[in-house]
Image: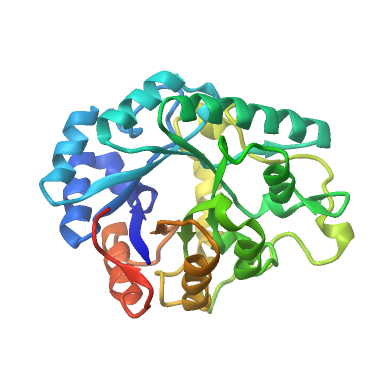
Length: 309
């Protein structure tokens, strides 16, 4: 049975203003399993908001909640030992690389070597290292998806996967089929939902072999302005997202995704322990109101538990 969690990216604007107060509110809503989201790893090996591990852990402890995973971006430019030490102090044993940037097949092979190297470091420190996909990992080299190539060219002891079912679906791949394919390599599930009235198209990378084949670069790494600015976007990017891109997202359990089928498949085919709710954008009055609505909507599904680890 999957335990339900929440990634703090869903409340990042609130975290920016008041990280401890936001953590208390999220835990107070009843979210027991928390994935922290550090997109400021160049400057901060912790949760991204300059909060020491003991303070963060102590705050969650008061509500019976705990950190079960951590997104760390850009992992390759972080102080990896400091990242590991921080998460060990939290009692967390899962480190997630939330995004990669890919160009050529040779570059992809080099990154697979890096994933093995970084995963080995995590493994030797009692941590599980995972890669989290977006839609661009379903672009192809010679007809084979980047995500599948990564899985085939990395050691299962050193790299696991956090499957984002929303981005998988938007890349015109059935999340259930992907879970059957990747099986026990999947240790965590990310769940968003797609709005029925979205202005953005459902499919992001096309259907034909020609449309899906790689040409140029996709993704983002530690050299991006986003990473250099500690996870902050330019106002121009924000405005464009508000106009079209953010209309694709809705509170989880209120959209058109076949979430019960995803839960059933995760329980049947993967080694995932958690299904982690993530809200990229909301039309509601606040991000906290959004994650509360997602919690209410998500309670209708079966095969899940809201208990702590």
